[in-house]
Amino acid sequence: MARLSLRGIRKRFKAVEVLHGIDLDVKDRELIVFVGPSGCGKSTLLRLIAGLDPITEGEFLLNDQRMNEVAPSRRGIAMVFQSYALYPHMNVYENMAFGARLMGLDKTEVEARIAEAARMLRLQELMQRRPRELSGGQRQRVAIGRALVRKPQLLLLDEPLSNLDAALRSDVRLEIARLHREIGGTTIYVTHDQVEAMTLADRIVVMNGGRIEQFGSPRELYETPANVFVANFIGSPRMAMLPVERHGNVLTAPGIGSITPDRLPQGDERDILLGVRPDGMTVMPDAGGEGFAGTVVYTEYLGDSAFVYVRLGDEAAPIWVRCAPDANFAPDTAVRLQVLPGRAHYFSRRTSERLSV
Image (cartoon, rainbow, N blue to C red; front, side):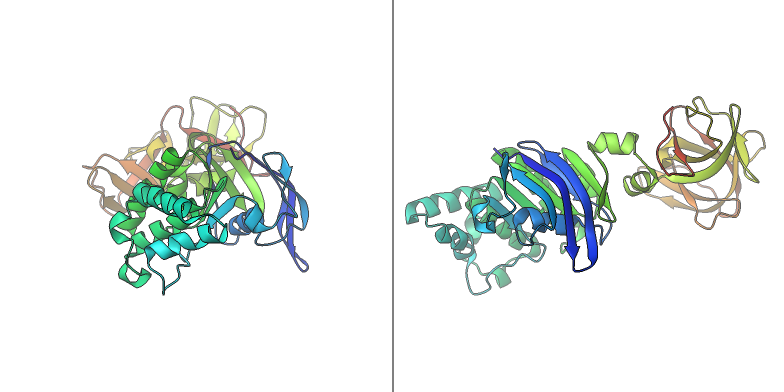
């Protein structure tokens, strides 16, 4: 079992504070993903959990026991680094055995643990190879196997797929998901790739600027983002954001058009950000009437669907609209966008926080 609690965690490097009071509870056997842009503090937080850096303020509890002063080797935690960190002069077997031997395990137990990890990671035929004789995906599996041999309470993965090409990332991601189900342990996974976060996580921690913006399931973050940052970060392509003014039941974007949505935010806030995901809009040739007027930049055919890029008014960046694969709007075509029922998200232009409907 591995239950994790962080209470008021702060981290400073000299005068610079990079984590600003992190509070987090992780349940036993969960796969939690820390996601956010570069520099948001996710890897720093992982290093504090591992014990590689000291905590400036706050408390870290593992199974209700304080870990702040416990040495990394005694925490029952294993970490897989972005750079693999394999010993080049050792073969796969020796790389996997090294940490287990340092734990003082006898030869029989070491061999049993290596055999189990090799089976789970499909490494049986590679045990005598050295790292230079392995592909990137194989090296990453060896690094994970070395961590598993220690049978940790908590497994930490720091951007383990960032050095792999797109096809290999998908394959190894599936391996990690399968492995987590098989070993049944608690795992924390760090990435800047929101697709990895959405496909792997039981729950996601979205970080920005050393703070947690939102913590919840992939579905919760996608369907009810807490603020503009989460709405833009989760989902690909990102959510379109349009400043609008509320006049009764009508939302107006000056110079672009207006809509009468099926639902409106509670309260009397007038200046609103209207958020719509690419599959929450329809695009059609402009024949006037209700909707937001724009101009097609180009149409991107993807086989099973198409994205139409539309510039609304003087907006510098176009927005994405997901369409049927036979959509074919020529550049500079005048179009009008409609928001589908139940697909509008609302945020305060003053605070960037989500508005309830």
